[in-house]
Length: 249
Image (cartoon, rainbow, N blue to C red; front, side, top):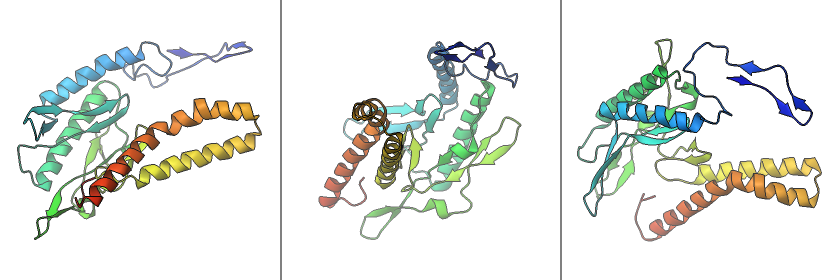
């Protein structure tokens, strides 16, 4: 694909294009058929991944209905899931299966011309420690040096990725989330985005009309989803805690 620059003064005669020579490198931004093409490739990857047994198994506590899912995927943002509700797995067993799942997904991406980036990857290993009174807390697995996960790299080597605690938020689809549901990291991100936008607008010396227009089409779409989701979660957390349900976030 060749990319030309189009402006109000006309189209550029020079162009830019991919130079790595990999034909399966992707459809690139701006390509109208990219969404449909990505869907076809992604479905094939998911089916191959699930065929190897890499997915999360869930059981509804009320109806006892069972379902399974490989992960939550949106374009290049993927959250792989490994959980077995029908087995009592130890952290070591879960870590091993998680490594197998990540290796499978990474190899499938490499086969299609893509690859995982270590700096953008992280994982949470979730387990629980039970107290004598029957209550529980999240185990601090991130402090265990032997709990390591690595991803495959196109050159045949592997790269280790970061192990985050259950309360440490990670940016997913523009919002900071973590397994425990803790919302402080997400609120901080929304505050940072809001302050950066406000500072930029003040320095621009725009008219009142333009400021309101930018707030509607630029600022609010940037933070709306994160604010609504995080505040709803914070309200649920507060309500459950006030009812005496410990660590149910």
